Length: 191
Image (cartoon, rainbow, N blue to C red; front, side):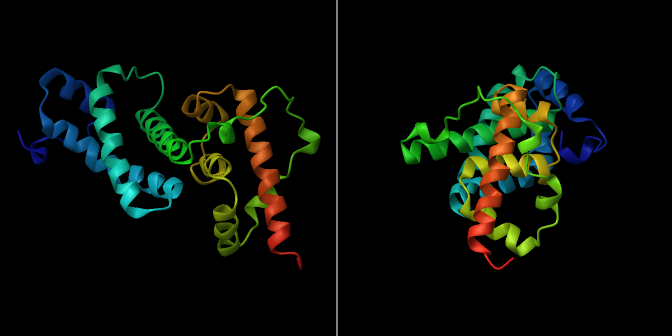
């Protein structure tokens, strides 16, 4: 069976069920076509290198293929894939830096809305400046801000992906926004 013989309107869940039942690679090819560009985009935004991102994309798809039977449907398939992509890229960065302590945050601090940097501040930034600042802040901060604001993920979805509690995710977002604002002020002092 060729992919052109499979209706393109099939949901991800139906494609997965058919693949698992038949092991027909045409079904997996559908998932690859739907998500390879998005996965590559996430990899390149985290790894900042096209060749490494291409390699990571292939590795992520191998993980998806190997673990497809473990997809339970509790979250959206796209969230599950994003989780695999995010974790793979972060593990890659950790291995390269060989310093996992850079990624450890103190998550015991209470989330305090009064100290929160207003979302409006981030949303009103000029795109060029936004890109510059995102390249300057740590990759963990960049990724959590991109999940929240670019990908418009909920706190719950980010929590599932990062395997952290929702309160820890809120704190990470708060801290990332504070670092973003501080970096912005350092680079654009005249504003």
